[in-house]
Length: 297
Length: 306
Image 1 (cartoon, rainbow over the protein chains, first blue to last red):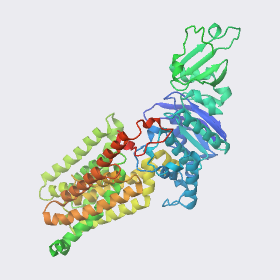
Image 2 (tube, rainbow over the protein chains, first blue to last red; image 1 turned 90 degrees about the vertical axis):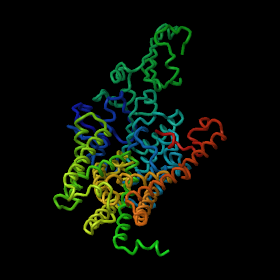
Image 3 (cartoon, rainbow over the protein chains, first blue to last red; image 1 turned 90 degrees about the horizontal axis):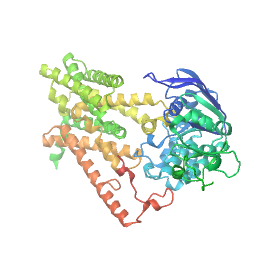
Image 4 (cartoon, rainbow over the protein chains, first blue to last red; image 1 turned 135 degrees about the vertical axis):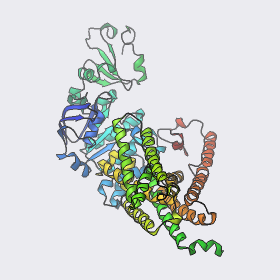
């Protein structure tokens, strides 16, 4: 579905944002694109959207070169909140209708089918009642859902989501994750850029870890490991480790690792990633190296 | 009563009123886009930058539109060059380039006071416009209007979300270039109507007024165009009786409408905001306590934004 082969992107200023990036993704998958700020996540998105042309290498979407795929409306994009002008005079339904533009003729007159698709998309994300609101009047989670509805109305096969969980409460995050799961079942491919590590094993079946180039790519269970993450994030993560006597009374050799960058923490017990049940702020309170004798998990 | 019809008896007044209305309408069309992007000052910069072109065209006896257009293009390229080769912020670059062009125009005009009338460039002279110039203005405005009418939805998409516009198969760079070409062409046309100093008002005020009156772009566009046409027509008409500069009258009218909207607009006006604030204080004490996403009625975040 998405095949990126050896792309190198160099900006006019001379900095190379991406070097020799290669990975392949199949349809019917949710792939997390994980890396620190400045690791090249947004540059990769720009390359897939055709905003920057790679100096070398090729990107193919459903076997087509980027411009052709874009003309056919195969790629949908859910922008980061900061990129959107929330004061723009458009209603929620207008935003969703924008997803249909690629399907309309020269004068962009919506057909009955376009209207039906917009209605369906709005109903699906649960915004049918709010369709006549100006977009800036929605809450953070509703805004995200409005743009997700636009991607659904567009019927893109590849959906790019840029930091979809920033500024979104836990309940909305769960709703979005559920929706992404449904879209995956329909055979779409979602590429989700995120630095929210804790939720990655939650909903991504594949992961691409990048730091200017691909550090690791593959199924979450094999790729999203502590060793790989430490390469991707270097010293920028908080890292707490509890093991041995501070964790167990018995001879259990497993240790507990908590990795966090202020968002939801990622917890390794033994070598297996699991979800932290605790809300993020308590992770800071977890003793890093103090012997927390009485506090057994 | 018949006194009020006097302006319609003069050919030059009829011409002034219709040309003003056309130019005012197309500029208002552009204003709906320009003010949304925070590019309003680009309009001002363009209008000032074309002055040396107009002056040079007068000196060389060329059609003024040709000179103006070349100067505008040169200014735009100049801004792009300075911007890409320095770390200066955009406003500083615009400020430097457009004042340089305007100064050059002033200098050329002051050195040749007989062939170039600086006052008609700075303040416009629609009442005294020659038939040839009027024809140029009408052709420019008509072509601009056609282009805008055919691409207004595409332009809206590009202005709202360039990445999505690209995903929908549009070419944002091309549409941006198209928009700025039309904007420079209309600056040239508006120069004749209200003068270089006031072009900025025609390409900002109607859109800004409409913005206060609606949350839907197509309506904003319609309101803006109607405002532009009516105020420009009326301004030219009134300038007959006031014996004042047409541009001044048009822009004063537009500003009065803006002030009325600013105070009285049903949702985003000053009074409405005050009513809402009062209602909110009297209403449920903690809007944040509502379940996810339930935005309190009448919550208008626009006003709280930067």
